[in-house]
Image 1: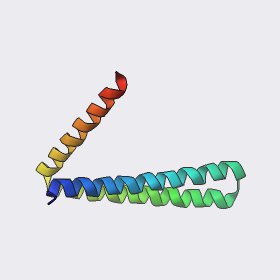
Image 2: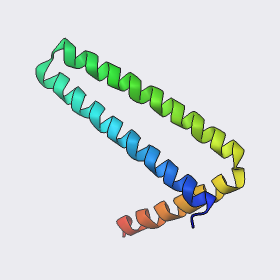
Image 3: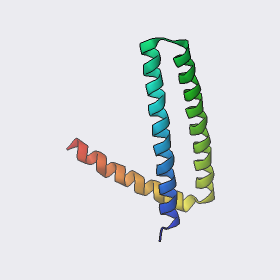
Length: 94
């Protein structure tokens, strides 16, 4: 059975995965725009960028509401993620 922290972490990971996909798509569209220098590709890149920005802003607002709703769980999750990232980064420096 998953705890609330695990569910929050899984939800955050899923949102970050979606954001990564959105930014990858934005990068592909920008590359296409640079290669073809077409106004259609540029417009699609702008639309995708605006969509990604709006989604990022909305998800950050959702995350803020989640943090306000569950501050202790959020703090524990952030500590755990920070600890994990610190351990991963330490391995890359050695």
